[in-house]
Image (cartoon, rainbow, N blue to C red; front, side):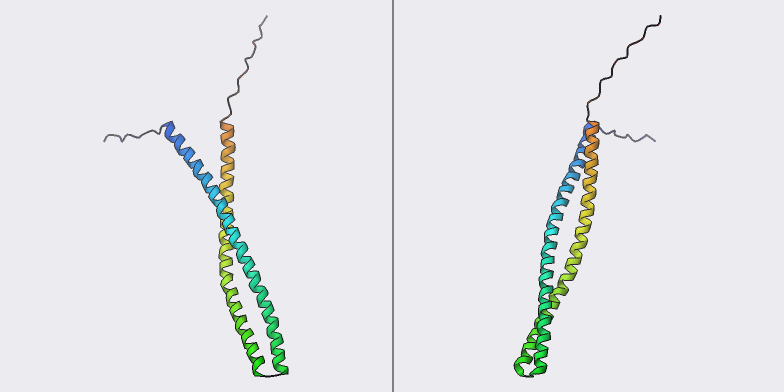
Amino acid sequence: MPKKKTTVMKSVALEKLVTGAINNLESACNDGAKAITARSNEAKKLLAESKRVSKKRAVLSKRKKTASMKLKKAPGPDTRKALRDIEKELTAVKKMAEKLKPAKAGLAEELKSLKVNQKRAAAYLKVIEKADKILNKPAKKKKRRRRVKKA
């Protein structure tokens, strides 16, 4: 059986592959940084929304407590209606809070993994740049030694 010819890679092709890989790593690092900033902004917005809902919930809880006290002191249709309205609003706020919980958790998980992968890509890139700097240094000239004449 005849042996199959194997092609040997040329230096130009190898150089092209290496520079392409480095460029891909750089773009991944940059894209990761952009994604982290975008997700961080989303997380800040969700956090602000969560705080707003939480504050509203606390206010409504206090209002419900005072309305129920008023209802006990002076039962009437207007106080009952006021209490019912507060309870409806409170349940709506609780539903909003329940919707925010999984969104916040998912976003936090995504942001965490993005940061890990971006840190990894940045570390690889940093090491590759250091290695390139070392490899691309010009060669030092060697000093010629003087021969000592034997007497």
